Length: 350
Ligand SMILES: NC(=O)c1ccc[n+]([C@@H]2O[C@H](COP(=O)([O-])OP(=O)(O)OC[C@H]3O[C@@H](n4cnc5c(N)ncnc54)[C@H](OP(=O)(O)O)[C@@H]3O)[C@@H](O)[C@H]2O)c1
Image (cartoon, rainbow, N blue to C red; front, side, top):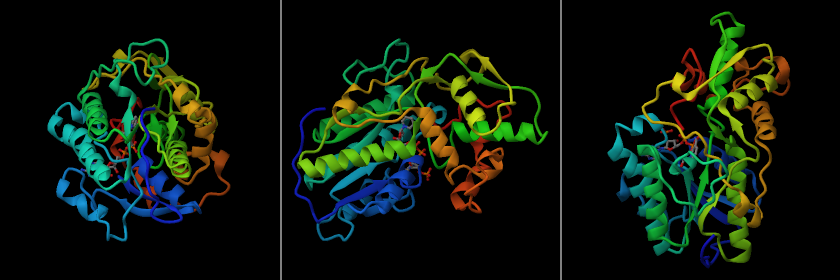
């Protein structure tokens, strides 16, 4: 990580503002902040409250006299629909590059720390060993290019910002785990037949949004307690590696669907508007040196499956204890676009 910034705390607790609070990572950040004794939620903004593409909406949240004034802003908002970015280039760049840079600039002006989140898609994706932060980027998609432009713009504008790259995120909302469970549940009910088909030649690391949120907040705490925040580029993801096929197999096995068959297929079996990286494992050495250890994705998956974020009707009996009636979040998932395909691969959202 690069230079560190000094910051004067605004109160006894670290006050954090979250952008994109309805997304997978955003929701986890809000929950963890609300549950922590040493953190205060300065604001949690959904798209309705702050539309990132409208820069006029920034200043009121960062005014010195605002009761919502944060010490740290974490940007969990992004245009994450990888395939749609190919045709919505302008919007992708505005959301993923211009807007974060504008937030980073205005945070710097007010001595507010800024954490931004980026992606493994900034790399070419043809490597064979984990990508280090300083390795050359070469995105192959509009989404990846817009996110890379965001990294450059954020750090160019605000060198004391932190840009965290992550990969294959699952958490509250629409994601690959939910898509696979939906496919399994439909086969169990007889609605669908035949094996699932899942890509087995793309390598990466699944990352639980809850663990990513905790890691980001740990970095915030470290920054506050040492009065010098981490800055520059940092990779954060769960430990271990997987293909989409091996991830899907683990999902089914852990959720009580060991009998559901999956056929491993090559990437060429599914056409997507944006190509997916064949290899996008992110090296975690720098995170470990900074004091962030993340558990294996398989353990994180088990925690996620036990959480209320996974609708109970998508699970076999294994986790029937401890379930609530299902909140709005969980009800919202079942009808989402990403899980209605007959052959599950990767949902359109990253
Ligand atoms: N998901 C992955 O697999 C993955 C992998 C690598 C990196 N990342 C990065 O990790 C971060 C978090 O990802 P995630 O999975 O939590 O994403 P997500 O669930 O798609 O959430 C993104 C959030 O951004 C919000 N948003 C979109 N346009 C907006 C706008 N104009 N103004 C304000 N908010 C807007 C969305 O609002 P709506 O709810 O209204 O749409 C959504 O709540 C992103 O930076 C992403 O690029 C994700």
